[in-house]
Length: 317
Length: 319
Image (cartoon, rainbow over the protein chains, first blue to last red):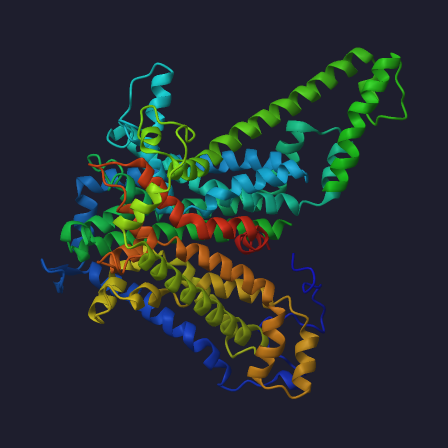
């Protein structure tokens, strides 16, 4: 893609790793002025990432009065309240289930789609665009469209269910259906992104590999399963991680479709942060910040898994 | 890829057909000797091959229809008469002709133009700012090799690990205490730089032909001049990808704009369209119209800028 510019890095071109530029006099302009170029970004990160990160920790160890003002130091009491809250277990379970309901179908479906679209042809180009379209839909637009489909009285889904002789379902108003319904909306929104990434991965599989596999008699399903999928494992893994993190951070679809209900069956960790911090003029920032730290820890663990596993994979190659 | 598929796939059935017709294997045409041992098994594998092709196509079409249906229906529903879209079961196409009334009504309920301006304005400023800050950082780290470049890079990358939702409370408090709630500034301030943007520009600049930069250096170009006349033009593909990606992300933003805006006049289009979905007086035509209004710019980007998007998306997944 960037073939015009990308070229193998030779010893003389150096490639720009930040090693000391020994013997390259014209480059050695290491004064403090280059730091100025970093300043705008540092200022933004300092104000809106580093400072709030520290403040989240402080808030999580502080009480909050009814106006949302920070009161006295309470140590770990907010965490104690979070972890002993009978609701919290349910919320973490919802968060986990939501991740499973969204990530597994998204990965499986987009793998099937991408493998079928891998061949270069006009039909496939049209299909690629078709499958990329949901990527344009914002969480808000997708959610209101699906809210129309889920509508118990006039929605399309119940029309289909009744057509096949079923009873109308309260998609968003029944505890057991609400979370899968939101997950379904999310899968639809995510398909485009996933297919695009996988197709890019498949496009970079060397022709010789496919050719060699064909000569060995692999074709159809066996070719896909034993050759193509292993070749794009790093993309699949990347998607599993990013899809999982994205599902943990989901907010809009829950807010638009169910507002966490019915009976908090669709309240996930992030939505509970919103509920305690902002919903119905609740300003329980202490409790919400303790939950935010749980979120940070969970995401950090997943990111660490990504770094260690992907790092190992690269070493193997 | 295309070489392998166009030469191989058509070759196989043709060879098998020929051997079946002659009831005698023509060994030169196929690679697999065993398949030609008997014409019966050749026939069978041919049937299986065609059947699997047809089955594959069917699955693909079915999935395609399912995936594109909400896209189609958001547009069809927007143009449908009440008697079609609000009927039960709802119509699938505008049986009674099309109408613009859903769009007109939507524009009356929410301050549509104003919200478009808010969305466009904030997204454009964020996009330009992120391209600028990311390019400056990457330039300083890769080309100018600022002291401690590795450490800086790790720190910038580290910001990507912090979920935005986890710092949303302190950020909200910051914006509040600055008196910026419900202002345009509130929409853009936290997003003027991004770890992802820095990562993308950094990875791209590392593949630069450094001889060019060195040559310009020897000619006595200053840092700014080098950035402007060498590095920026060379970075155009990466800038395009980053700009498109950032525009998509922030046009579609939801949580933060929801928190910091209060009046419909300050809300973005994404928040505005959710007001069209009132549970007590549910009007599906209106909802579809709102969705269409919100996605038209991004839909154009996804259709026209697919190449740049793929490059941007895969910046993190490959290499």
